[in-house]
Amino acid sequence: MKVLAMALAGGQGSRLHPLTAERSKPAVPFGSRYRIADFVLSNLVNSEIRGIYLLVQYKSQSMIEHVNKAWGHAHSFPGQFVTVVPPQMREGQEWFQGTSDAVFQNINLIERHAPDMVAVFGADHIYRMDVRQMVDFHRQCSAHVSVAAIPVPLGEASAFGIIDADAQGRILGFLEKPETPPPMPSDPSRAYGSMGNYLFDTEVLLAALREARERDEHDFGRHILPRLIHSHKVFAYNFADNKVPGVAGTEERAYWRDVGTLDAYYAANRDVLGAEPRFNLFNPQWFIRSSNYQGPSPRIVSGELKNSVIGAGSLIEGARISNSILRREVIVEDDVEIEDCVIMDYTVIRRGSRLKRVIVDRYNDIAAHSRIGFDAAADRLRYHVSEGGVVVLPKGLDVPDVTRYRI
Image (cartoon, rainbow, N blue to C red; front, side):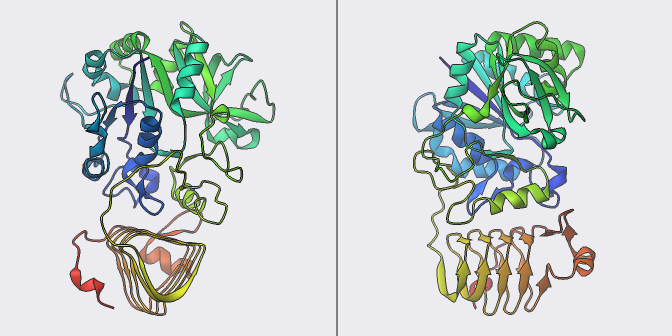
């Protein structure tokens, strides 16, 4: 069974601004060393899906550079690749107009490989998934299309695109953020939320893409799938049934997060912390791959660290750090306090500073004795503050300054 993957990584991610001011949503850093797109790519590679096209568009340079550095090894085996595809404009002078249009504009790649199935997956979610199990479900149901669905509490379901399915899992309808969501047949307390991950029989996909083009339609969720449920067998695959090896019993087993807002992104980063994290990034049986950074281990000269992750190449001297993530090559000087923060790569935090509930993007230099996260009114005058009160500093100038390493 040959499966070709088309991973959609062109999302603008406007609700993640300013983190997406210079990069797409899938390129936003996550945890101590990853980008958001690393999760879908790792899931596909771990699931032995060898051919992967990553479709990019919005401010794609950061994503292209990351894939070249982190996923160049994917070409090590015959037939295995992770290839970045920007808009080729083969059908006219236009960018991707939507999710299905992005795939349609690369329909020649599907025809060239002639797979049995095509996996069309989003590249902007945090999760682990064995896609082979979804392929098995698709075949057992003799489905034409399968849609990955996550059970969500009924009280929260109005925030999702909801799938209405019968007891066998066949999809009856799609509802966008309904006020009264239909419950799952097997669990009246939950509803099926669409994860934006689809498996298509190849011929069904090709025909649907061509028809959508004729109709001037551009989106899977709004156009193609609602039409296919009336003419084809479209099934919901219950993500809660997916069993990834190595997941601890203390973890949230069906962990999936759409980190589409600053507060959701911040919360997901906190989910990887703790002795028993909700989502443990260390799983030798299901690696999340990323860049092969060759820098040194972190150095902690002195200080107090609690429930935190410190990235490679970082230097800590005399700081107090709690419930925080520091990515690589972060410099923290004496008498600094960092609490409940995400500090991205190549940042310097000068002596005497205090940061609480702050996301600091790359290449920032925080002046000595700064106070960020303690005075909401003052923070709003200088920085972006999320609805949940998280202060966000945009990316600084990405020109490394060797003098910053002096403490």
